[in-house]
Length: 417
Image (cartoon, rainbow, N blue to C red; front, side, top):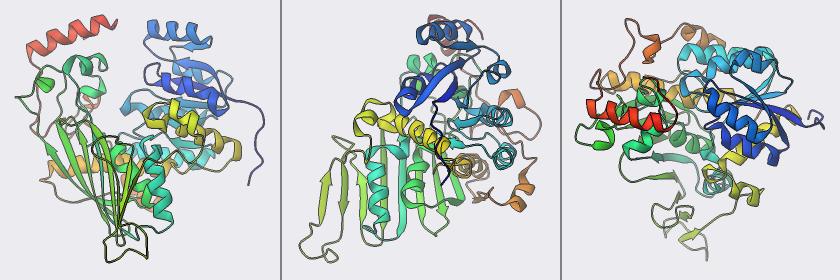
């Protein structure tokens, strides 16, 4: 094991919206926040003054600040390019989801991490909820046998004014990202618990709902929700459900060949249920147990953090990886796996849900095949052959949605289109 670094880890955060959570957690994990960066200069100045740290509207100038690591909480489709630039500047990187927006970006990111030897961590926080960490512990102990089928769900509806408030601008990524892309919150826990990866996906979408005001009064041009069926590298199957259906919640279910475990769908959803068939239980053990697990470590600090404790653990493991030199569990390869599953699922959905491979970018021979793949629905990258944001094609927001958007955006201090 590499010798631990004793001095504080100096970190900068990109993105003063989502990035606030990382700013608050940094000190609790032994990191020192020294700089922040954002292009929204009014918000940047206010946050910098409140925190007493350096502020930068220019990313390259930010990277010249004396620091060891960068946390990327900028826009969903921009992470790979920002990560590559930070790694090349000699910084460790923790990147919010997604790790990459195209397969070509995934190839470039994997190569850059290998070439630079810096720590890269994928900041997917949902695996670190207490019940998911407990399911991983139980799975590794063999309590439910070999993984055969799993489910991960991330269902997140909101009223239109709330959605507009966090997606200022017609071409904000939340307004055009296809329904399959935002899949890591649902796929990651199953991968984490079972140590498996998807090798093939079939993508399905629930189309844009013209009868749902939460869609028609929003600027989104994407579909309502998505289901991804993943075939895993141990021949298990998992179902990922994510999107804006009614019924807010997160759910994970693992079927082994000796038992089943899941977090509760009703009541206190932090509870874990584990059960066996009556004819398979051992001795006096109960057929079913239901309990609320604690975090395995750092329970008090994690309980105070965002996203069910996940925001603490991503920062904690990032800091530990920097100190020890040992890559974190959520390394660049797992981050890419989770991210490109959504991209390949969109290819599948547009191809009548036919199966599509999820390439393994640990292998340079595989990477060579995808290094020029720039397939993307990003409006800024539009060219012939690029995909739409919806299974229905191009959708234009209604005049009512545009009027409401201007009102909400102005209330947030945003006056652009």
